[in-house]
Image (cartoon, rainbow, N blue to C red; front, side, top):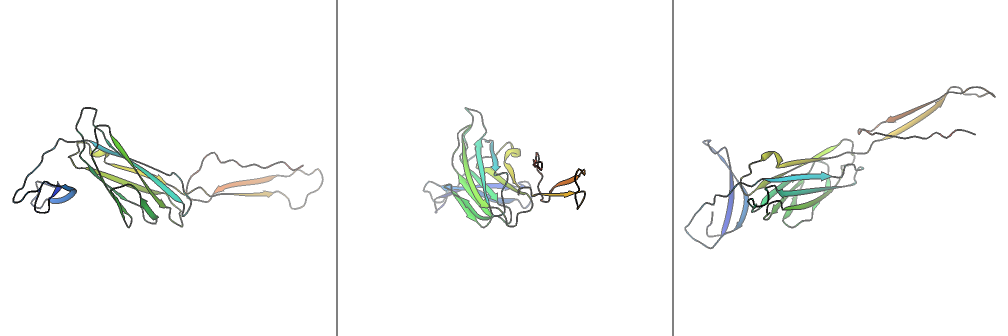
Length: 212
């Protein structure tokens, strides 16, 4: 759509067959100078996918880094994507959120990025950061969603999630079988290793050097 403001809007229509469909602006761009005109542009569908990875573990208040890659999933020779919108709602408790890439805006816990054109198999990676909650006792899940300016035939790859968990909290206790030792008496030691945190761990190792 173009008008006196020379602005073209791309509109997504939800429930188009409903008596009250929902119209959502998913992209804007500069339009040719024109007055008293309107128009529509029908484009070829483009499969745009998103993938997110994250720092797997962090301490309370520690830095978490998320890498988000948007890819035009079409094969070589297929249609190009003219652009996309990326939306990431960072989990509650995360602070000092940043998104350094051009086209990205941080508002509270929300990150929104406007991306440009992507040729088939072309991609772009964004890096977001934040500090883990403090206290940090349970894993957090961060989900990002991409919406292409063209219709997307594969909705299943338009969202991606990544987990970040607090470290395990290991504790150890040791006790012996007697309080008073006599020469040549056999002793029995009991050692208990516990994870008193909220995150599982594997291959924990402890050492107990022999007394000489």
